[in-house]
Amino acid sequence: MTHLNQSIQANDAPPIGPRRWIKRAGCDRFARLIVVVICVLCAMTASPARAEPPMTTRGAGAPASSGSHSVPSHAWLSLPSKDEWIIAHVPPRRQAMPPDGKVRGAADGTLRRAASLSVEPVAMAAFGEDVYVAADDVDENGKAARRVWTLRAVSTGVGDLWSYEPADGLRSLRSLPAEGRLVGMAASGAGLVAILAADSQAPRVRVLWLNRGEWQDLASPRDVDNWGARLRCIATRDGFTLIAPDDSGSARTWSASLRDSGEHAPSIAWSEGVLARDRSLPTCGIPVEFVSVCGRVISVAPAGAGVRVLSGVDAGSSTTLATIEGVQPDAAIAPLESQGRLVLAWTRAEGSPRRPGEPPLTGRVVEMIELSASTGRVLYNAPSRADGPVTPGDLGLLGLVLIVAMGVALVLVVRGGEEAEISLPPGMALADPGRRMAGSLIDGVIALVVASRLRGTPLLELASPSTFVSGELVWVLAIGIIAGAALGATFESLSGRSIGKALTGCRVIRATPTGEPARASLWQVMLRNAMKWALPPLSMLALVEPSRRSRIDLLTRTVVVVEYDPDADEPEPADDI
Image (tube, rainbow, N blue to C red; front, side, top):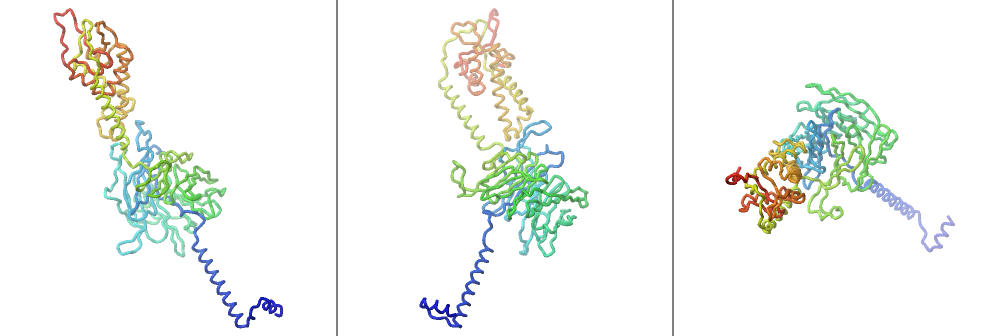
């Protein structure tokens, strides 16, 4: 005590009495208590280590049944819009389909709006052309409700266009119980099932089956209740699988095989398993989602801001497939089973980072990535295409081609060619317009037949609207133009006659001022046929030209003639056909 007092006096501080010391000690304790409370509050409100909220799959794909890989599958995504949630349809992609082997389906990146919701979907399931959507809502009395809807994609028969039933939006089904967490839903030939994990003191996992508009309980695994908070649900070909990641980097699985029992509840068989025994799944609280495609489990985990790592997972280990950058937290993912693809999509609004060379955004853009589920190779990475089979770009290109063709034809018509005086060989006369038109029609039909055989499209289908909407008619016409020009040039260079000219008695020769018979050269017939098939209006001008020679005849210095007997009393007139 003496030493303590000496120290205080040395600092010229007044001595502390017993009451003052007790009061000061109490203040220190109070200050420490405040500091402790502040630290606890900061720890409770501090954000987790990751930079983004967990990513949910928010998508569904129709799983293919065993042995039916050739059946095209659909995928569905839920994407946020300004004041609603969009149910988007990912139609089957282009691929050769039996029995004729023709290519059908939508182009990569195609995404079409099917319906909308005012509440956020919490689970989706798909089977065939049907999709099922569940969302937490409130009923008319203000009580919590878990609503379920369905929608069907219907082929219009016109190209790869689809309509949606009901046309006025989603059709309501029986609501699910609102208690607990909706782990997920799965659809199969046995019907629609939903998995609920109760959050009460006595945890319980329920498997519910929709039977004639009512939800009915099915058997669940015996030890799955303790994992309800961690369960994920993925649809499989035979039913569904529940996955529960643990803290060691592995995951337990319960696979359910459903068998349709007609009007009775489907028989359900459970089998337990494990994923990633080598403990290669992310840990430390990193949220992991799972999706199944072609019988393979794919894990999706965040790896920093805007980065998602996709890995193939089996019982032994996990293998990284792809690392995708620039993915938004609200991204949705769904499988395209029949083509072994994964589809990722998210929305970008005004002010979001832009791609190199991209103009400023004036609204919302849906970004899409499609990649192979087996190799991880990116097959499409660009804004989604929400247009039909015949895109505005295709129509614009077609319009540009027509404008250029019309301009070239107009220039050639105005300038024309040199109408020099020519002499025809003995026994030959200028072919009349009717005969020339009949020969051209015959050549055109032959070219269409060749093109339709090369494309595998029946000739009678060319007149249907579907061939135009799907773009098939454009391909057939383009191939027909090339085939007609090639066949015409070949036959005219060899014999001076195409097939149509031979059937109508016409021939192409070189125009000479002396009247000596001369076969048209190769460059003349090639140029002649190229202009004739690419610019048909120039050939049709021969119908109204008094000289019976079209602009193509004048430009290529050729003549279309018919033969007659010079020994007859008078030349046989070229009757119109």
